[in-house]
Image 1 (tube, chains in turn purple, brown):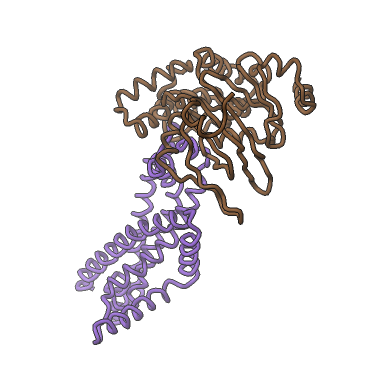
Image 2: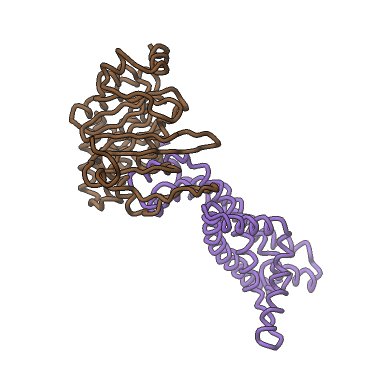
Length: 219
Length: 266
């Protein structure tokens, strides 16, 4: 088990890095997608709607496999020889795509819950649309979206474990290897559970602090 | 009186709207309205709900873009691409112009529309800071001045949720004033208020009228319109059916619709 402590630490690092990178990229994608979905340009709005519907309707595991194998086929075709996609990269891409689709819907709902009168008031003063966005929409939207975002981040941390299926050495894969080689599945899977639970609890605490920080002033 | 676009473009300060049409949700809300507001005028627009008075007001600063018709603000014709015959939305073509024109026309809404995450003072200063590029500290002085003008010097740091409806609407008026606009548009400013709070808002508006500001007021407050305005207009089914100085308007209305309207609002 001793050797596996080191393995778990390295797996933990991979899991955290994967979650942070795909979470950050996914939120950026989600913001853009929400803006696109709310855009007056119908084609763009439909396209984004199509993206979020498809991604949310297909199991994450399949998306990961499609991106991993699809990516391998595409890149191999491009280079004219067999190139295997890096598992971490495939993980980042697939989790970003998934996280973007879910957060897009969260952000869209949050924007829609801001009374239009507040936006009209900004426009009536002569504010530029992006000034209106920064002054009125963004600060309130983030606060409204925080509880749902917290849930989504927790899901994301857990979904990183799926990337072990394509060979990424994260917490999950370390646990699976240990469980197999030392014939102690319960020990290893409980250890992995404890690690995931620690990460998700940490995420909850951070979001709790954020919610306090961004609470409606003066309430 | 001379009319026609060429003439008006150079000669008319204030507001001029010609043949404004707007269709909303399958209804012809505005059916070719003409409107003139000269500098220093205080025009009250009355009419039953659904007569198109709020929509007309919103067309003046293009929060609602008319389907047809021309608008001149301070002699400048607004660039609008009208809706095609086969439907589709009419739209603004010169966004820079629209922002400039909006900044010169303060608007006060029925539902106040303050930003809840900003203090009263911040609500007032954001416009001058973001649009007129006034420095924050100078804008704060400006903001305090206008909050004082609406009698809310002591509420600068209060958030909207801690203010009564009447106080919120006065902050909203200060927000419009801080842009130092040439025209003030009021869209039923007291309709969302409890009866006991209406007076404080009307008093502020009457004081502004006394300063010789140009104001267009959509309202249901008959007594206020009669005392404060220099002209009253009655809208009925998307047209201005009658307009006259308030004395005539209220004492000897010509149109039967206006007579019925006034009778039902006594």
